[in-house]
Image 1: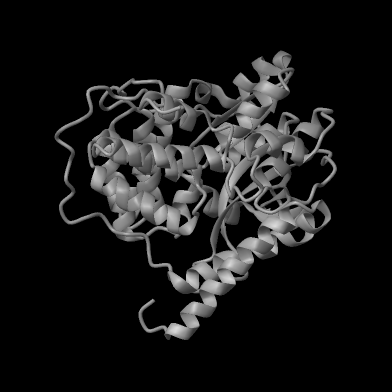
Image 2: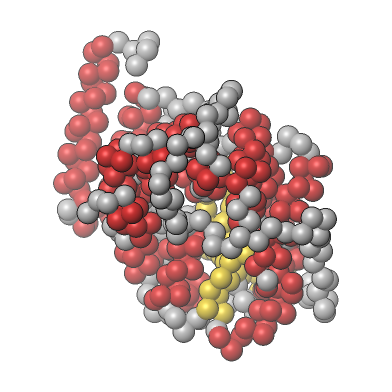
Length: 419
């Protein structure tokens, strides 16, 4: 609170307490909750940022200290990739061309548009996508399972896949990374919408010194080569919005060009035809890794390309290389909310023994998003590696409180002997 008068600090603290009380009361009244919760949450965040101004993402420590005394047991974390292949040196993953030319334009019938609740674009977008296949439900059916606390600000693409597989099992769901415009068009040409996750810049700031960068899901339902645009169903801005190929790819790149697709079991052969060699998950990750590397070669100051390189190395459990790629992304500069949505750096620093970096980064992530169950979880694992079991349990329980269905937190509590 440097540079702030004592009286102003007291007033801000009082306002925070009052906002907390009001938030609790509002949450218990559905009609008020629906209309005012997001305003109270935004005001709470704004007030916190006045007391604790946001700085840039911390750069790597000058000399990171690896933990030399690891615990006697190493957790098998469900949040980490289960595959351990190391791609053959020099191997390339060159995509095969589409077997047939794509039409110049395609327009699929858009499902009924649904406006997202506060920080609920993932469930709302998936809700529209499922309705394309005749599902009857809405975003709250999905968010009740994936983010039971309304204040949870992120739903991962893996969680969306989990919902479909466990609650709409008559459909198949999967995702890949390293996509491109032609691949998105191919899904649409075969009659299937597709979801992407992108980064974009909001029109307004939510707190002082806000860089305004946020993550968002979009459902693609049409394209037109003549105008070089996709038609997207945007749960925040509205239905049937036009987005140029160039603008879409710019935002999509910040999430490793990830895409989610749903299909009926009898459509699997068609999906394999759409994806070609990308059907194989290892091949897909190797291709995405090489794509990120090619973008780095073209522009060594591309922070998102470095970040994507790290994320694809994480898949192959090449922890040290991944950590160094994330280092470079941080040196160049990343958005403030990057670690609200993507957690590869936590895994890379943990598994490469760079616990100091893990603690710095999770602390920063929690300053931005104080109820991030993923940041709480990985900070707990960092404390555990430092020998602070009690502190680790406190973080694990906080993560479970943020999302009572968070299986990784429940596993962590059981692993360290809590209950």
